[in-house]
Length: 475
Length: 94
Ligand SMILES: [Zn+2]
Image (cartoon, rainbow over the protein chains, first blue to last red):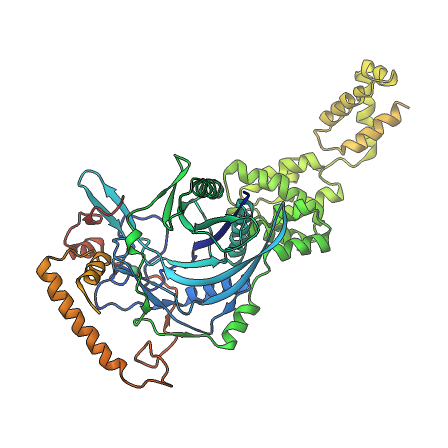
């Protein structure tokens, strides 16, 4: 029998706000244990949580970008569970009236284009970190992350392959990064994903019993966990056994999932409306304002670069792979730099320099005017392309002055044809053998001669002009 | 209907360990509370909007501006078990 894998995703995304969702503690990553806590986020009796305005704004922006219906009258609910990662013994979340519902995300894989339906998007607070201390046999609780704002995005069970899941997560990550609502760093846990998976005979029919796999912190782990879990379920059914609905954890080292015990009996959350937080009613003006302020997303940019600037698909993807990089490209083009040349500089020298320094594009000090000026000088023939690469390296770190650097280091291209011709003549005189070789049909000898001329002119000549001068003299 | 089985279940969810006598007392107590809810349930609420909040307020929001967190020593002083850095609880992690 051929089996079909059916997957739905629950993705938790940490929002890039300055402060926590219900108190004024900082959300900054790191910090000594329990130094980013206050009576509100540690759940002291008598404290009152107050919703962070920006959390609401970011959640609505994300909902709009995922083509969701925004809930005009929304509310928070208490999800009760007794586990020490939440000191209140409940998580403030949204069950009955999530902020956004019924969205769509279009994805592209080798298999073609597909639309994934979003079931809902809701706001909630993150939990603290528990570390077991083998010395004392106790668990240490660090509540620094407790109350950090999250949005949880739940899809319909629309995925059939790991490829589709990865494509969706990449699209989601890109969208949220462009919106500026999250940095989506999986390694730091700001994008976390739970995989709900079941199998059924190919061709549809009722959904099988599903399991939920947690602790997936890389795309690679997600793909492997999907393969593993689908195979495990098919084997179970093949042996005449049943799949048990349960929460499983991915073990990166063993390359396998295993059933979690601790939270299993606690799946009865006894939700009820959160009395401490009044409902949220969004006006048409508020929604129109946010809708109007939505930035252009990566997909729209790719389409525009292709249609307006004639950039190849590959270039469009590379440049839009990072929001800051795309902004840099647009800065260059706005200053009059030719789009394709700008793209080449970005994909070559800029990305090269960044990766050599282990830097992110957003931390780059080089500004578009500086690179635009360099590109302009190459175009005008006052600096040759090879020299320009050296100038680039020199100005990259501190956004130096291109013109001053070229002047101070005497790097202006020699465009005086008589100078080039004189140097070419001298090179032929000094290397009669090479000249003879060339005349005898050895094309390679010309390369050597070009090198000699370039050296004499300290690399400042246009190699093509040198080439032409030599050929002319060699008759 | 509250019985000992339900009390056991709720105690499990709440991570409470109840002795036999306590279970009996808890069963009777919860029974009383739920009976009171039954009184409320007898009211005719047809056409009345379900209410989740007592006060007619909405959109209570704060600016995303950081304020100093609490001093850690002070924060931990209120906990029954802790060291200089963290709250300590019985083993909860697998
Ligand atoms: Zn706090």
